[in-house]
Image (cartoon, rainbow over all chains, first blue to last red; front, side, top):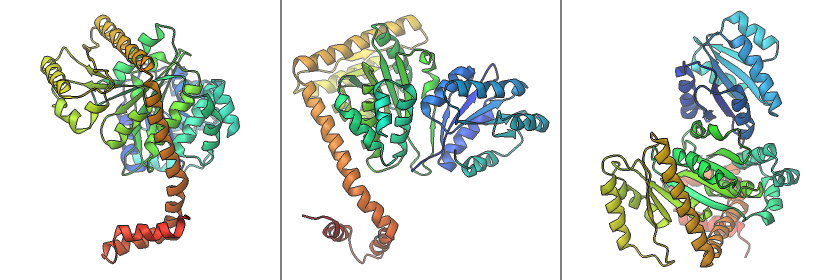
Length: 132
Length: 319
């Protein structure tokens, strides 16, 4: 009985954690996904270490500061360095479609959901994502 | 899987993490890895910490890590969170409070979500403790919400059990109801600067006067004040750790450690038998649809649970 396991993270000085808390809560109550939420102001390295220790399938990063083009590739590098090469990243936040496209194309993230996307879309994507 | 066990023995963080994840997921041949590490277990001092949600278990654990590390001992922490029985989902965030130890190689903190499986809670915790134990951790802290029989069962895996009470929650009655009074080796009255702490202290004390302590250990009550005063908070927790060590020394001196170990292996063989005997039978019944049929029969009152159980036993039990 393998269950999907996600680490939800915030980084830097980004204080807009409402959506990620909502996502964590919705995951728990409707989907059967195991969500770990680490709180705000965490470094990417700590997040990566945590992800590897928990052996999660996914890391979800919420970014509302406009730094997404820098942070997502950094998160990818941090995860790879910590030995979490197989862990996929998804993004959530104030991220324009053209930036999302860049991030997906350069392999930093598996998917990006704009802050206007319903929470349900994120969960559906998680549940129907091919494993591995 | 055996390979994973071998790597866990060397303290390889990734192997340990993977192994615990496999335990959570109940990957079928995880048992092979546990078989491999079992002979090397039993070295760590296992401390259980339990109490109502919001009692401050995580904050205490976080500070306790500091007290233990100050004596150059290594620590493993397992924070157990029950999964939702309805969706199987879980939301874990304990380590928000413990991330400050993330860089310390002598500390390994891991949340454990307990999937609703039968008897799975105690088994997963028992196996998880083994993994942290062979990883070479001197002290293992198991943190669990003290509600429900299953959580109280976890206590069977610990040498020293801390029960955290807080004033103003009607706790003295709640704690008796939850069966926590009997299992405590040390009581902690947390947030002791709050109103009602003295009252709670007296009530706990008078309740203990009614109790019997066959082992000769009368649980001390440690008052811990708010962590808003870091210095006094740290000092109280240092004292708490002294009491924990005292209890461990007491167990050792009186050869009571053996008794606790016996309790633990009894639980373990119980769980192992369950997963070796009951689970395969149940799975078969569920797969073949017989289980649903039985449920329907019971709903129509065509038979009763005991007759059905006897029938299943007659079919599968070879005497």
